[in-house]
Length: 248
Ligand code: PGA
Image (cartoon, rainbow, N blue to C red):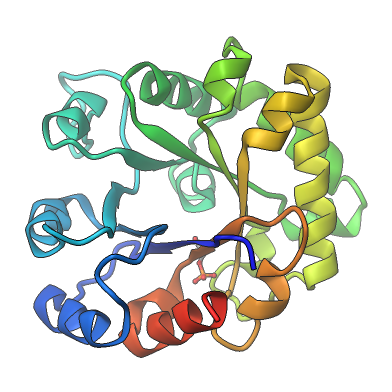
């Protein structure tokens, strides 16, 4: 099986970090590649300390491209200070709860790439776009706006995460075929704009109610290189199960 990226998004949940990683270390070898924990910013330093000497990595859930009078934000410079190499950008909760626009997402993606941080660029339609069959056009627009002004070389660094909003935290998952169809479409949008080589180099994850029961059928799809997991990732036993399924 191809190497599967397992990205875990703790969102805004208080996790007992010591207990969580004690369990994780019992079930997943410390040299396992491709596992990243996207933790609340207040936890980043602690988790980095805990993960020293392992292959696991820590990512941030959001950042802004600038510094100054922006109460409550964390900046790209701060990520660089702590050598944090990945950051979720444009998560649907940022877009739909906090009003982040495609143009904001574009600035963040650009800043991350200029600053040596891999942006995990989240895109995905709501139920209304899906039911009115406008989901592909909608996602295409999100992609092209987010990547506006970037070079093909920069785009090759981006990790795309297709997360249909209607499947996030709802227990509803896109079928593996729906997920594959959209991830294939995402690759074709990148191909049309930035060329085949770039399209073949990007990673595309699926996210939205991924759990040990459905992960296998999702990650075996051709255009899906991994998963972005929310709820199930808060439970170490489920993380171990998902890891084992992907690494059999
Ligand atoms: P979920 O969240 O797995 O709880 O649906 C996924 C995400 O929002 O990244």
